Length: 280
Image (cartoon, rainbow, N blue to C red):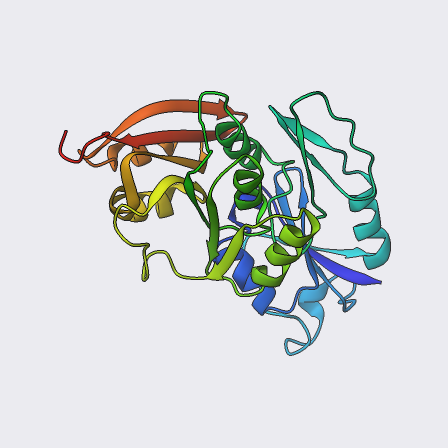
């Protein structure tokens, strides 16, 4: 038996500080269960872990509850329940499923692991739909995925024609996972461990930027997004919980204009664009 720590409604924070804290606490896997984030630990802390000696129970972020699970069955059931997800011309499929494609569709093989982004969550679907939009021509584009996690969005950009697709993430544990996913899909997408806030890309070096983060990070990064975009460039910002989109919109600087608002469930995607000529 094993133990699981469930954080209701927190799945969108898995790629940020919350997910990092759970990995630091020693969890073996992070799973999406609807909007709940579930961290699986190999040890069995019993039905009442708070009564276990304090040095045996990991220190985890507050707001969750402990459950006793069969680790093997829990993870296996999660995998078995995953089906292929179709978003426009992109089909994201786990390797244990068969993918049936229509003309013009591209399949991305991706199994969930210790980094998030399988295409099943609304935020990932919103970002994929933006990249696969027929009105967006990625051919020859330089694409940056901020908070790349599993690498799905950078890989999708590469498969959709980008000349260069780079994914950056602050969590080093995501790097081998993203690279393995790129190899699985024969993708040229590159991945680096990098803190976007501390080491933003060179000015005007990005044609398309995609970031599946939470609202507060988008607010903090907005000026860096604007500096990174080349003239005519676009940034697709998702992971924004309903009710917080106004704060992100208010942070859009004068150099950018809001060109798109999309909502799925409780989540928003905002798209901003830089004028074709700087200062225009």
